[in-house]
Length: 592
Ligand code: F6R
Image 1 (cartoon, rainbow, N blue to C red):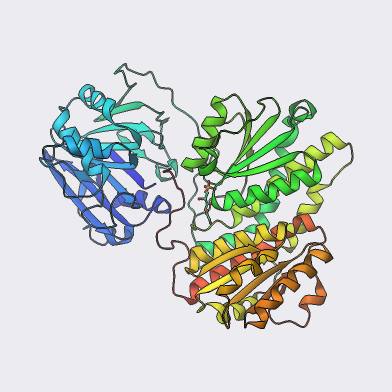
Image 2: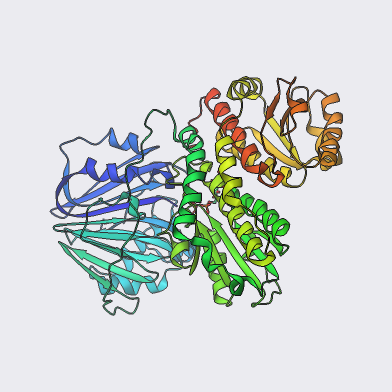
């Protein structure tokens, strides 16, 4: 988690560095800070809260030739000024910014002669460096032999002006070089658009930047002859245009995102490699992800089972890591799903699967991400940059991709033809046609409720899970999801007068009738029923119902989630919350 931007080069305004840091605010926004060095004097400015707080405290006339900056998502220690990065050691020999977690921080702390005031693992590390290494890069690298955990670290050393010391393990870090300027960042999105060379730091690599030169090392202090990389991605500015928030902008982009997705797959023949020989031996498919990506996996498993008939299981990445499943390497295919491609749990699960020799495919929105780079087979999602913390258009594109994949495999194996392009183009046309006026009224009727319950059966239950997550994230309403038949087995105790009960009814007639029966006990106790349905008869005379025009029950999730994303957005606004940056959350979770 957290974001890092470092700079070494010609004299520039501090504010220019912080402008780059702002692009990393999606990685956390609990506090921000910057340290610069000039004539062996360290200057640090930090602020609790968002990067704008820091920016407003930095005079325009402050310049630097070497600085490190950081935006924090608090892991160790509260979001306070003392815990904000950068962290200097007691004599200011080392000042550091860090993403990740130092796992043996307690062991390091116990050895320290001077204990830092900050609660963070990072402050312990900076003091550890002061007490255990001198100013040269060799000594710095040696000190890391005793550091356990994940880290992207950039340091300033008081005795070396215009120099940066860098260490990386299990947390991304990139360096760009152009004449007279070197930038370091945890995501290339925040590097300057123009550069001569771009380097990706690999695990257990170190770098030393001095004036305009970069030297790379392995952890045995051997010089690494590092090749620069190309990222075929244009980091064009993502701005709000006419929209008040990214979340609503990204919901409104769903139609074009699905269309782009279909066209991209067609133009690039992305699915061609998944031919008969690729798929013929697999008897199991495991889909793995976290949060919304996990929900996409659950829907994707339904697509594959229904259209292809291969048994699927879906795992939460952080749980899967600790399982020892008995699986045949040749008969099991894994699919990892991650919008960012950086989620630590998913990445870890992928590494385990890779080390055991399984074949796997990664479905990701970021083609230069760690997950993409570790994958031979990639199913790209073409959602474009997703800035709002709550995933909306990326989820829709994940479902689109999984439907294309499942249909393609069906076409390969079964010999009958599913015209998935046509199916999805119809979905794209309809996705934004839900009744916004009705949802605005529903939002007003539920936003003060402390709880909300989302219900459904089978695939509708999965949408209920995702809809509940969306509402919870951006409104702080304690929302929960249940398979409709489970409601009476305990949860009914929480239903009160006015509790919103949001019911998804898009499955078979029998499923819908059972779901609606199951909700009667709640309605009798005062629950406020809201129905999302593809059955006109339930929606025509009901102010609390949202009609979705879906003939294909498998594709209903794409159409029923969009109005729920919109509802969550509206509730968030009514509650005065910034839906793009809800409290405690960050867009990319790069710690396990
Ligand atoms: C919810 C949300 C999170 C992410 C999860 C996985 O709106 O965004 O639940 O889906 O953290 O992130 P990725 O897909 O980047 O691996």
